[in-house]
Structures are given as structure tokens and as C-alpha cells.
Length: 108
Image 1 (cartoon, helix red, strand yellow):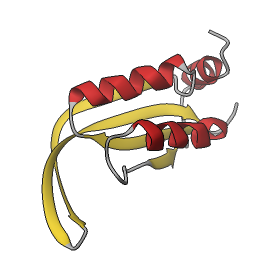
Image 2 (cartoon, rainbow, N blue to C red):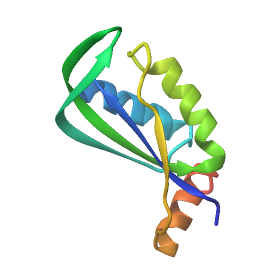
Image 3 (cartoon, one colour):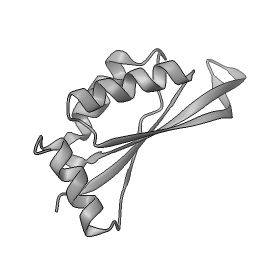
């Protein structure tokens, strides 16, 4: 089984989260997206402390698709510098892992 990843990004609203998710799914770069509703992000940007309401997007993919996912997000995301973080999925049920692999390999 290939190495599985969960890629995390934040988006300004639900519509953008859905658009990014659908685009990544259509290109077989992810197997699943989970869009969580409003959260508050507090961060420093360009010398100022900012506070924003955002949505959290979890994307399930494989390590070999990561660069394509990042490239897609960089091109399609409305933020100047979007958060794009990949965490390894250390353990997953065999069936779930195989499902992710089959989707991103275009075997579905």
C-alpha cells in the first residue's frame, strides 16, 4: 500500500471549499474531502495580528499525489499564501487505505 496523507488547508468559505474539493476529486488527486464549518484563525500576516473566520478542509490522498495536490491548491486557492500541510496517515484500516489508493490511481 502506498503512503497515505491527509492534506490540510483552510478556506474563506464553504463555496470555495466545495469548489477546491470537487476539482481535486475530478482530477483523481484525492479520494475524499471533508469540509468543516466555521472556525476562528488568529495569525500574524504582513506584520499585523489578524483574525478570520475560515473553514477547514481535510483531503485524503497518497504521498505520490501530494505535489499535484499542492500545485492545484496554489493555483486555485484565493489566498496569496494558503496553508497547505500534509500529515502522514500512520495507520488506517486496510480497506480504507486500498480505497484511497484505488481512487487516486483511477481504478474506481
